[in-house]
Length: 145
Length: 145
DNA sequence: GACGTCGTTCAGTATTGTCTGAACATTCAG
DNA sequence: CTGAATGTTCAGACAATACTGAACGACGTC
Image 1 (spheres, helix red, strand yellow):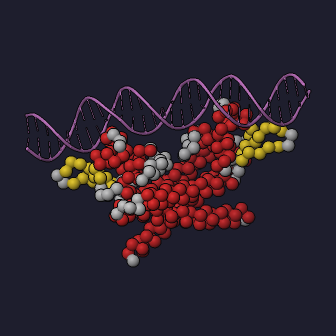
Image 2 (cartoon, rainbow over the protein chains, first blue to last red):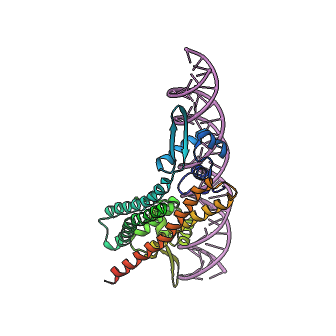
């Protein structure tokens, strides 16, 4: 439960909140529940919830006749996580291409390394979706078995 | 050249320095060269150099009869980068397993999501080296052609 | 329509992290 | 041996960040 160190590019609060949603019971919790469990203020929960929701790591649902919002960590969260990891490579490739464009007037020797960096990122960017697809197929097969 | 935003888990200085080493000419530069190019203090260069060197992103070489150290971004840097990316998944799996051990006395319903998270990370952790191996083979083939 | 509850927003604050600049150790040249 | 140059280390300043707590608006209830 003390795994709030999962702040990989996220805030510590986001790591704690997501970790809690992975192990809480019941799986759907209100903001007040989370605030009490994590000993955090409601303001922090509000901001973190929006961050996690836009990242696709958590889902916020409402119930008819109930103003409260229920948060949960759905299975799609893992897909979103892998997808965002893939986005990092795309981002790196784009940065490299910007760099190549900015150094167009430099001698080729100076650009060779950046060019290779771009190629590597392009390769990984292309292969990662294939791996994810294979994983999803594998999971579905196991889920239907 | 203004791509110092590459601080993905690294310090801004590390991003700037690595980016510079990717495009500088000549490819091998002394600490003074880098400090002058990036308008940074020698202290920052020293600390950042050690950080990047231990990560395998840069290589520091010396020449006989020359006290200065030469820094460069070798091709192996990309391999190190992909390897560290793979390490992230392993780390996540280990964290998940620690969480599972810590919640052994909880009802299974509360642990199911964490269990699945562990499985997904284990899968990716296993598949990523395969992708990297395929990439290396592809690059070598192209390099020899 | 008034109250309690819930979510959001924002200023303030504490904490963390990053860079600078000086002091020190070490090496090579004269 | 002296002196210049290089790399390292450390304290301090500066900036960025994350969280708290209070104020505000909105919805449901009585």
